[in-house]
Length: 358
Image 1 (tube, rainbow, N blue to C red):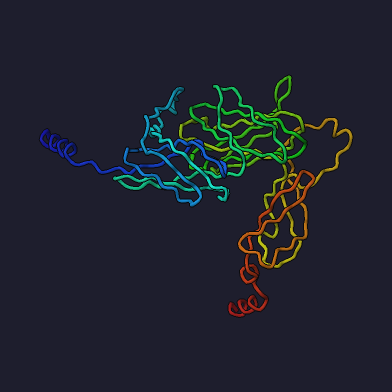
Image 2 (cartoon, one colour):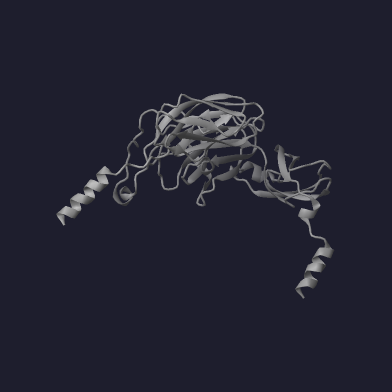
């Protein structure tokens, strides 16, 4: 028995180790404004000094020496009890890069990748955004103050839930009455945490919870509330289970104005004119009595529906943008453009189908 054990130990020790390809984890900050240049930390695992970095978007330029820095060991606090038995997160290293976005880049996700002598990683993403980007700079649990939010001035803040039990807090003043939307980008950026957003209205005697929402489906989330002009609000973000890790990066976009969530019908054909139902927040002004105005408080925005007659251009292709005017400002609504043959089935085709069945 001893001979067998010694033989197995020698075989395990002497066999060659398989090469481990690098793995990507995150970019911080994960969002860059279009037309700007930003210094970004690219984090990952099994990094080596011979790595090459690639941007798969023609308008995104990525420059770096490719030399990984130190290992980032998770800081305290640490779990105790039942949660302390969970598997530990992998320990990342980071490479500093300069990312430049051309002015003609379309807002959305831009993919990047690394390779070395051991292989090629899976692709990771950066968020290209048209709004100004602020980076999280807070001291412990203190809130970070953001600029005043108005209909003509939306922006986003990039941060991370870096450690266990961390709650990120951001404060801003809303310029005028109307709907305000907070949109979380986390899962779409590759961060595997379930965010929970809270909105509090601040006052001299404390704060009032306006609304909250949890991303239980792991698909990111949006929430819209009716704000009061001149009031300050605090948006709080944390993981549902209060987890934290250096790879838990996010981008939180704040915008004032209406938001359309659905249209009926969902598509249009080139040259088509028809009545369309638009469903969303802040699409119409609700009439209020004098007593309601006196006791009005911030609250979750009600879902509203309006009907408009729209006409898609005859030469429209792929996607057509319709500008919707509302009491709280204008908003763009995207309609996918499909051919008539793809959108409807003629009565003759339906009849032929029913004859074939019978």
